[in-house]
Image 1 (tube, rainbow, N blue to C red):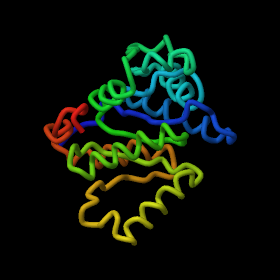
Image 2 (image 1 turned 120 degrees about the horizontal axis):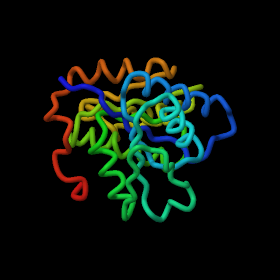
Image 3 (image 1 turned 30 degrees about the vertical axis):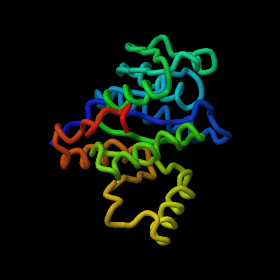
Image 4 (image 1 turned 135 degrees about the horizontal axis):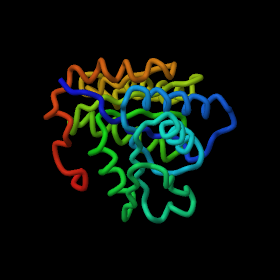
Length: 201
């Protein structure tokens, strides 16, 4: 059995056109802080990334920001984070985000958020780790992706027996952490580590 001490949040470096997404990011940041769960995220101070990190800090929580050097000018790292790590490239960033988190949450975002989420789903499908992965389907944002996965399964490209991902879906911010904690109860500490080094995946 493992505990959720740190959550990696994938989300947009833009706020999107619907203020509900930024409000949800701030609400989740407050929940993490009040629950003494560290935020691990992409390090930026803009968009939904900035909203969730700023909220954690404003409510007395702890933040680890991890950002590649080439994105520092665009996403403006949040210097108030207790821990800010500047990496050489995206591969190092994603490896450190994985190592420092006990679970993963995808809030709304763009192609980068989608890529990070799908990578974790793929690693889990291949048996590389068993950390909980949750899709925060706020205002049905991820409905197209969930429909695509169902479509892939229906056509035999993602055979149901092999997709042992057991990813979680939450439609409300307040349901995210309880779902992660429940899922973590079934994961031993030893199963949280990558089966092989990230750079060899």
